[in-house]
Length: 251
Image 1 (cartoon, rainbow, N blue to C red):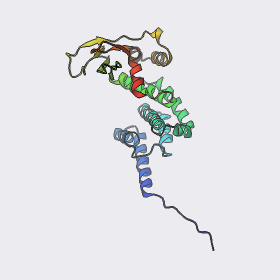
Image 2: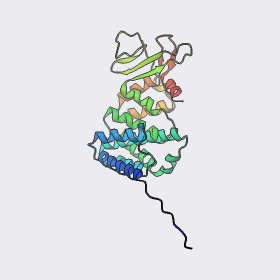
Image 3: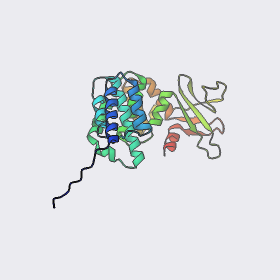
Image 4: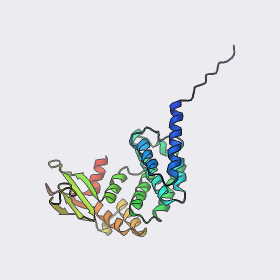
């Protein structure tokens, strides 16, 4: 009796997903298709309808990051870093990061190279976020950088007897905390923030501050002194570390 060989059919769903992923990555690589990037974020990051572990994803993003188009590289690095951190948290393992260690290393090198070259403030901030996400040592870089880009944080007062919502404003409107969204009510009570002095910064705060200065983004460096400083809750008047609340929220 001859040995029977079982042949498993290729899933049409998998084929369809691969075709869609290939098409989206090809469109994104042109640097002119914002919709492709929006769809990649939606399907890879937000709802997971396309699988981040697909062998096309990180190599394709790495190729874009190592190309000559600054906007495309920044977008590829921002997405790749976010996907790796999400995978770390979702699966409680760094398996994806380890499987793609060569690509991650090259993505990190590209992030640092583009970080030193970009003049756009928001792209620069997202490249800082990408560097931190690709290094993988912290998982709250997105929250930190989101506030620098949007110029505000929405936090909770850490006092267990208060827990009031506190809006922390860092940017063109000023540097203060408020008891409600200042954009919706300019009559809200405000209290000044207490920035960290550059010489008092250490660890990550000092590293990011000095990087921003050396890269010519003095406004980002200035904003970081506030992010690593203290805010006051307008309701109970407790002072607290802004970055400390970001870490607590992400824990």
